Amino acid sequence: MKLAVFDCDGTLVDSQVNIIRAMRDAFARVGIPAPNDHAIRHVVGLSLVETMVTLLPDADADLHAAL
Image 1 (cartoon, rainbow, N blue to C red):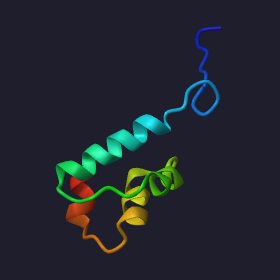
Image 2: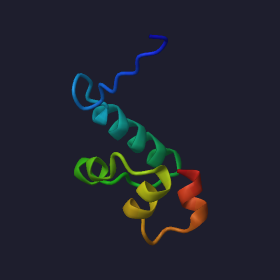
Image 3: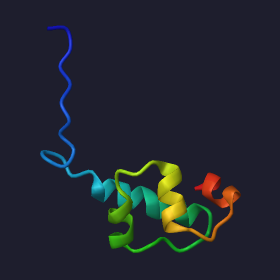
Image 4: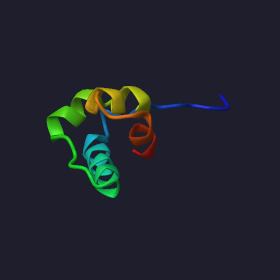
């Protein structure tokens, strides 16, 4: 065997705490309030584009890109 890949996320490691922190930081950097933790948890697993469109459906593409 040359390679073994393990997906521990959600079993051995809970990355949601770090994802929430990163999202809060990203929103703070562009000067807008971050969504609540529940909303962020709801989008974990989506692509970044889908995440931003879901969390900020009325924002323009420039804001989505900045985040």
